[in-house]
Length: 371
Image 1 (cartoon, helix red, strand yellow):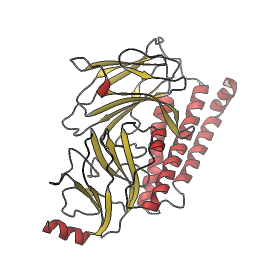
Image 2 (image 1 turned 30 degrees about the horizontal axis):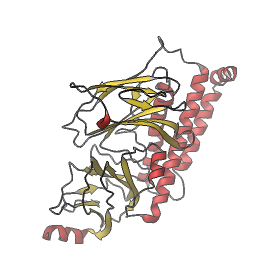
Image 3 (image 1 turned 180 degrees about the vertical axis):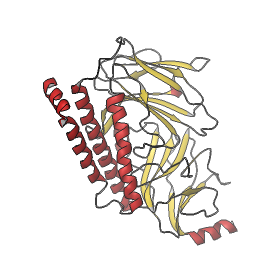
Image 4 (image 1 turned 90 degrees about the horizontal axis):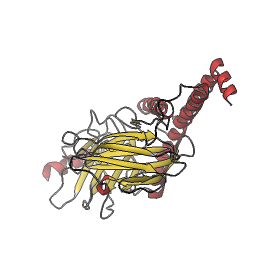
């Protein structure tokens, strides 16, 4: 295998195969049910470049489980599967045969969790959880410092269970208000590290390129399948298949709702939450068709328990529209005519289903102005 890898890298064949695989991933953007607008197609192909960047971080730059480090698998300019705009995501590549130590400072972020996983979108399209730790259940000292052991054998104190096939640790940090909360600072290392990593080999590069290309195609396919499945119930927001969400790396404390939306220029989608259950966090976000959150740096595309205005009866009404209807909970389409959307209840005492209605924007504006 090593001899073949040496030949394929030296000759350029490994690179050529990588480029061919990336080209084939473009078929997911050209599927017949996907939007045909230049805007959506441009975002679709940009999405593939973003997946490529994430894939290279995951399978090349941070791929050595003997010398792990955290990188962000979703952020402002690289997004996967309805990435939460209120989250700071971190991933560390691990190997369940090793033990690891995660150390850090808790900060003041509203929600923090650690989940070990196996699988991957480049393999079987799944990321199955093998162990989970909620910061609410952790021992943390008076200065906010903590230490966590990742291992197959159970440990006293803060522990995340590994299986032999465990290959990633996902850290989720969720903010109510980014401007007012401090994120946790975390590091990861092997419990018995070697002195230094070995130099890059042709075999490792060839494997990394193959896994990266498979990740781009597999991720694009997975969430294109999801977006397609939402179209029959467009402009509603039913509960998602929670088992499916968990199988691809969802947080076990979260109940997810996913759907598709499509609005004409003079239409608005009204989303009514009859009540907000006792919960640790909730939010609702608007995504493009490729299940990337819209650009929350420049557009108001999500609301949570901190930012949403609550009515006197405890309900919350959110309005998605192409222009401002004068409603305090307006979310912007940011130039899109269709896309997907997601609602999360985190640690909720009950599951409250939203009510949705498509209305004429003029009628909505009259309703708001006379309320």
